[in-house]
Image (tube, rainbow, N blue to C red):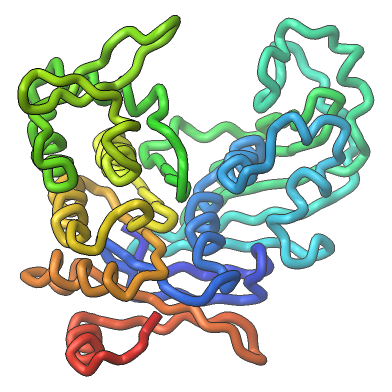
Amino acid sequence: MIESLYIENFRGFERLAVEGLTKFNLIIGRNSVGKTALMEALMAGGTDNPSLLLNLATARGIAAASWANLDAAEIWGDLFGDRRRTLTIRSISGPNSDVIATGRFQDADVHILAGGGFEGVPGSDAVDVAALTNARPVELAWSVSRNGNLVADARGQGTQLGAATRQLLQQQRADRLGMLIGMRGALTADNLRTFTQLKEAGKLQPIVDAVRVLAPELVDFEIAAYGTGHVLKGILNGGIYRPVGLLGEGVVRCLMVLLSSAQIEKGLICIDDIDAGLHHSVLTNCLAALRRFVAGKDVQVFATTHSYECIEAAHRAFADTADDLAVYRLDRDADGIRATRYDGETRAYAIKRGWEVR
């Protein structure tokens, strides 16, 4: 579990230190202060392949098609506060785990033209290699060190097809996964696969119980054929079937978060606007359900909110284990962005007094 995070030259952060991280971390603050960027730093900090960093752009609504014919600085440049300087993300998970990820732009001495396709370029195995020879001379150099030992070293360039990357040093398959859940969206194919696995294993009932808080008439779920694809439907009292999208945004949102959480046994879950689509009256139950889903796992949750009700709900959901919840408020002043931590005692006092902490 990450205990401390130090960021330099990432997005809008010149320098930021966030310490005292715990199992569940709620991030608050004004618009454009860096709440989502903080979660992106957590995700990027463990990434050894530059092409995976494109997932951050996708989550912000930037279409992959727009990357063709861009150079590395144009593709990955928004990750840097200053593209001329090195980007550094350091995460500490106790005395024996210090991970440092760094990124920089440099002149490329070779083009990325190796056999076997190109990581990050869909269908690259099937294209003519000559179509990729216009790789620009600028490349992103991305490296990850663990406890002083280099474990990943990658290069990324832009081509006619978009982003192409190569691994100079390949670490063993990561045993920690990361998932960034955006503010809006539909259930993914991975969500449906997880649903099927839980259903077949007889482990779906906790999700049904959690969603029933939002839809009391719900009995169960099942996947049904719909046109040429499949759709998840809710089974309601009286044997009525409804696509989950018709049960309300809150139901879809709750399912996305819980099914995504069930996919990861070890790693990070980052949720942007965790209370989006959820009425304040159900927040405590929904957050308590998420807490139960990650209990016993080596999973750490980070979530953002603008809602005072969500802060209160999280405080109630962790009332018996207040140390498992930390609330951080990001503020921007003349010296940059800083993080203020609210522990359980401070949160309780602020809520009792009605202080504005968002």
